[in-house]
Amino acid sequence: PDFFVSEEVETYLPELHKARIHINVFGLDERQHREIQYYRPNMHDLVAYLRDQDLLFSLNPIFRTNPRDRTQMTGLIDTLLQMFGCFEVHNGSQLKSHNDFWAAAVDRWRQEGITKSFVGGSDAHTLRRVGTTFTAARATGKTEFLAAIRGGETFVAGAHGDFFGTAYDAVEVVLRYVKNVYVDNEERFPLPRRMRHMAVAATMLPLTGVISGISTAVTIRKQTQMIRALR
Image 1 (cartoon, rainbow, N blue to C red):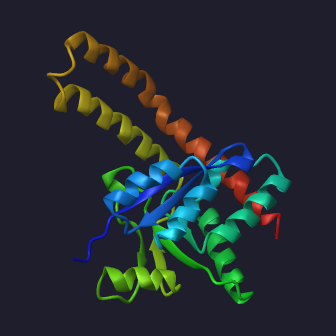
Image 2 (tube, rainbow, N blue to C red; image 1 turned 45 degrees about the vertical axis):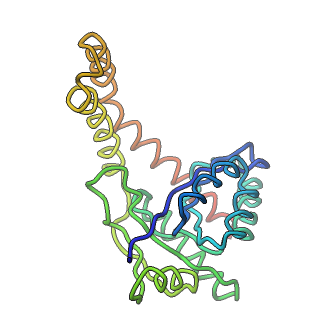
């Protein structure tokens, strides 16, 4: 009875070169999941739908949007501030500087009388990090828990991301792919095809972790610095 289905939805902001925005949607059902796919191409349409359905949703880290300059970043922050009432301020895959900024931003908005709530999560793509970052609240069940998030009566805690965590996740994903081809679906993949897949994985494995870790760290630091410059 205390379990509820949630999902991360990738949507797009048309006025910012179709920038990718990730949104967490909490407590949805199968029908709503299907309907979300229709509204997903446009963030404005998606947010309007989520509000119409009275679904709780939060903004995930925005480093994937990649604004080109300070003007674009200012416009993006203004748009997101108007559209979202809940922000993910502690993401287990993000650098501490990024998480600290968003936590401080939500706290500052509250002091200015702008009501915002917040959540945290591990953003785990591998089992190693599941539950290492979390949202907590005083609640006896899912209804009270979701109500606590809406009311801003939560706290977040846990691990922050770093280069090694991102690199490890990337390598583990490749290794899971190899296991899927060679062990779990051996009958589906003839030996020549498995050999080709193995060759690709062997080529990617040494570089995947390093490239993913460096790329993520550089992007997040750059955008965090740009956002801080707006204050």
